[in-house]
Image (cartoon, rainbow, N blue to C red; front, side):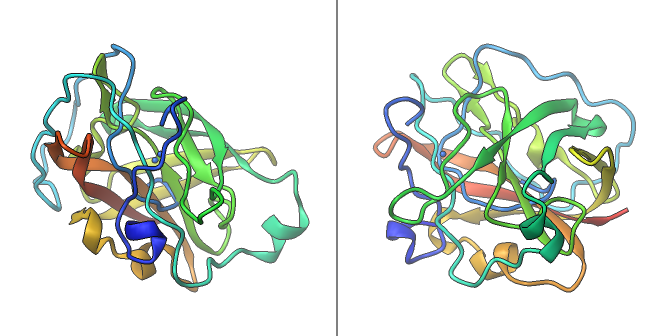
Length: 232
């Protein structure tokens, strides 16, 4: 995820076009994420204490580059069903507690093994090299946190609480339901690659975005926020 994907931190590798998603299902690291001048809906309901307290990310003066965590250093488990049925994939994700409702775009690794970010700030993406949400293994969904214009799709990811629901619609007509069990924030040079991408015997989900302070020199956030979820 960082240092050319040999380490586990996010790497800012977004091409000029967008120049790189966190627990809905999959995992990847994201450097600086952004969304075009949209405000996120206010959270309503439960006032439970966050699993992990996170600070509001500093806003960059201009459009930030976002890079997802480098490719996992461990094999990414993929269920036979999602390998065999090429048409099976997630199409959208909803997180009612933080006002997220987004279609999902497929995310892949670039030529140096780094997970590329969604092409815009209002849509999240699914790591197509891993399990389909709802199948065995850790699915990963990533999204930008913000841009110079305002909040992005995962701006409020850090607000997730234990028990919050995540709903992922799939092409087979099913909706995979998850509940959040933990939210963590990690320096990009200490991203928990194996924990996020490593094999697990059950259905699991990872959501990823950027967090912490903004590094103006690197034009990216210093940390990544990861939400972990299990089948509900």
